[in-house]
Image 1 (cartoon, rainbow, N blue to C red):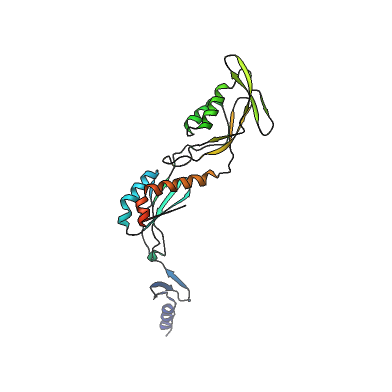
Image 2 (cartoon, rainbow, N blue to C red):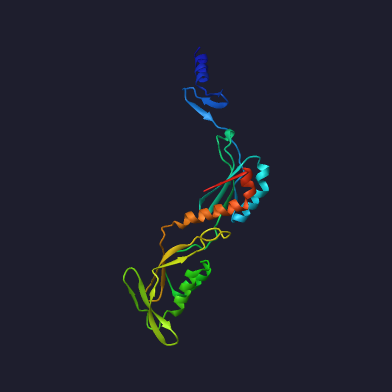
Length: 243
């Protein structure tokens, strides 16, 4: 009798599985209920490093996917391509490709020596009026006996060369428009203003002045590039692009 009673207790406390409206639940002997989600395997997201690579992948595979593709630009360095949510995977969205602008030089606020500033201006910034102005200014800075500077908080003056031996005091522009390489190389780099300063050692200081608004411009530029490259797919509804 005792043996039968123990067997009955064990049987009634064992968990069992129940199907309800297409979902699977495990019910414990104590009355607890937990849904069992199916294990669904998805291919890994393909990492890319350029917009051109992403465009080629989308153009090649968009028709074979059998559903619309969605492209978003979450930040100035990232573009993601994904599909529609899958009900059998609890509305999981498969991210097919992700392009990352990992090799852009970028820009760092602060002062740098004259020689380093010249190298950075030629390698980290797109050519333009602001770069030309700074290169011309740096070529005229006199460091024979230190650089004489005055700063009233708005503008600054420095002693600069004029001819072979003559020196003159020139006023620095308080702000300079520049376009550092900060997003994908296939698109035009966004221009923003930089505060310009110079210390008594002749080091040049550049400080971002637009509060990061250039990032929105960069994202919009990337979106325009993708819309142009994928125009046929966008028009047909096979691809949707959003910020």
